[in-house]
Length: 348
Image 1 (spheres, rainbow, N blue to C red):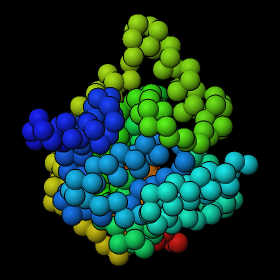
Image 2: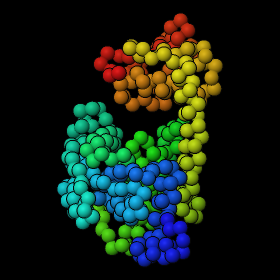
Image 3: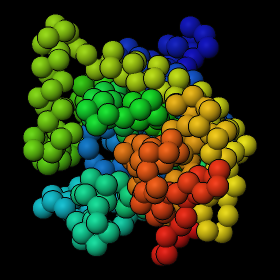
Image 4: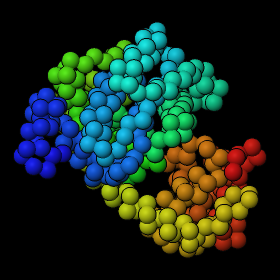
């Protein structure tokens, strides 16, 4: 943001109003607090055509005008799930053209992909989407990929993970940065972003599937959160998002501690992973779970590892069972070692 009153006045003239300036300031604070786009970053933006990603594009283009980073391309994935998918693709192509940006577009039959890989529609969409963004980033020589998750998404994710019995890592919700992926809008509500777009006279495309309350996330969005707001007599999303941030910080500290313990206790072999069982069993339970999770992920060959799998391995560690089959491997206790033997067909 501007460093003097004169610069502030120029900035306000450029962006049009105090409200727009406040949102730019919020986004810039988030970017700087979490180191999302260091000076010189080349940013690719994932755009769906919805209000969140359209606002993200416009906000980052404004902030990039200060020469801290550059927006090098947009990327749109057509999931081929809705009749309006073609409309959304055309909208994104037009938005890119209006702002003189290249755009990478790919079409994937997500439903078929999910069926062939044994994944839910949501999991299939997530996997296909992030694989695509990685390829698009390489094509554009981008060093960051920005996506439009908001404070609302953070609150919804926290509640969904809470209902599923997640630990600290899961309850940390959506992380501001994971690898190349950055999320500059996590401190901004969807309502504020839509007000920003209306103020600029910008359109966006609504996804009609977001109204289907049979979908768990949509039910949290349209039923659970409004009821929480009525009970609290005020907006609960900011408080839930703050709670997720605090939990995330605790979880990150434990993750770092546990990575060190994994390195000390684990031996990675061509056949899987071996852990020093007595030493691991002596660790506090939060560290044990994280070390086991890391070991299981190493042996899983890309399969999803859940808390129930970790608890099954922990039971073996404690002597409550002879062995357990978990994603990509089998866990057994052998002569003082907890051994995760990679199953045939699981990639290394």
